[in-house]
Amino acid sequence: MAGSMEIRAQPGNCEAKHLNPFTKLRRHLTPAQINFYFSIVCFFSPPVLGSLVSITFNAGGVWSVLLLAIKRRRFNIDGPMLALTAAIYAYCAAMVLASIVNGTLAADLRFFLPLITFLLFPVSYSTWSITEKAALARIAILASAAACFGALAIAVFQYHWLGVRAEGGAGNPIVFATVTCLAIMTCLAGALSGIERRWKLLVLAAIAGALAIVYSGSRMIWVAVPIVGIAVLLVNRRRFTGASMARFAAIGVVVALVIAAIGSRVVLDRTDFLVSDWDALNANGDHSTALGLRVAMWEIGFDAVREMPIFGHGITASRALMKQGFHDRFGLSAGFSHFHNGFLTAAVEAGLLGALALASIFVVAAWNAAKALRLRVDPVERFGATMILVAVITYLTGGMAGILVGHDILDATLMVFLIVGTYLASGRTIVPTGESAPAMAPGASPQP
Image (tube, rainbow, N blue to C red; front, side, top):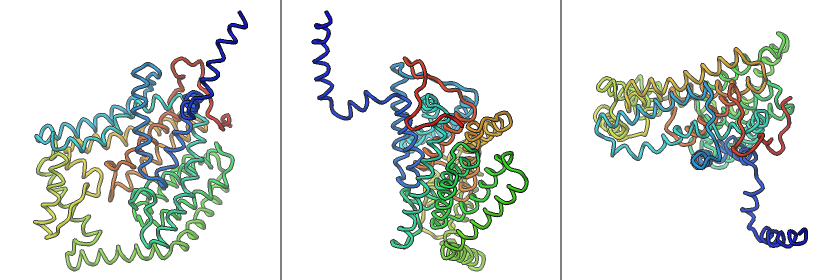
């Protein structure tokens, strides 16, 4: 019998030898290991590889839907996640409702595709929560560090060799600066939390990322960086005495001055542009400059909100209103996909319902983070809450004069930070269906 069993095993061995590498890889990777590589891409790619984060996140979300359908995964319903899901889905519903009310559903249908990224939130959360928390936190920190170094390399090349504002792999300086700011603060939070012991590497990465943001010329993110940095320091203030906090702040000021000195040409150029635009707007009513266009869009937007305050105009009609407003009121032939203010854009497209629903996403996220910081003492959980705060402050600051949501890279990165941050801060780890315990990601170490 033993001999016959051995003979029957041989064809299987021969079959295994002839399997293609992709099949072998799929058979050997555990769900947690797949999440390991998936997480690296999601945290590394936004500044460096741009839309790859959107492709990866959405593809992973669709795959998770299939796994849930065949019962290879199961929903992980945590209270904070459920509250955030309700806010996200309310925003999506408000956008669709505005189109229905205005009779523009067919015309707006193609603009609803980005909402899929938001709708995948609870599905992706459930799949991500099979990963051991400490391992996932270290992945986020180290991948963000690599992203900061990559962002600087691309920024230097684009600014000094191509002669353009750094836009990284995002193809847009504002988007590039926003996601690089998230990477910087993830490194800083990781260094201060003690999760990753190579804090010197993380500090260097944060400095590299800050230089990349300077090269981007994105003034609103220049404002966001110190605000978010102070928030991260305050979250971790218990780890320092008064003397060490003062010394750390002094070091931060010195580093900021060095960064400003290196990027002084960019800073001066962008400051001169702002002053020039302001003078042109006030003295001559010139709305053709970057500042003038923003002011014109805000005026058109507020007028549009007053016309349709509850449900808005719908997405297609809002863009037509902007073009018409530029032509009729300012004599300009211009048009944009958004009003360079996230909440104003939502209010024009979906009325006050849309703007309030969008605001609720950030309010609920901030509430979840504040609650976790008040109740949790574990470094990994506090790091997760810090990730949420970093995302909320960065997006709100940049979105006041730029893009808040509606861009594929920003939408996917926001979901990544809200999902991972919420899970680390207050979620529970589950095991994949059919497994007895979650496997630790390769290269991961236990929580310190």
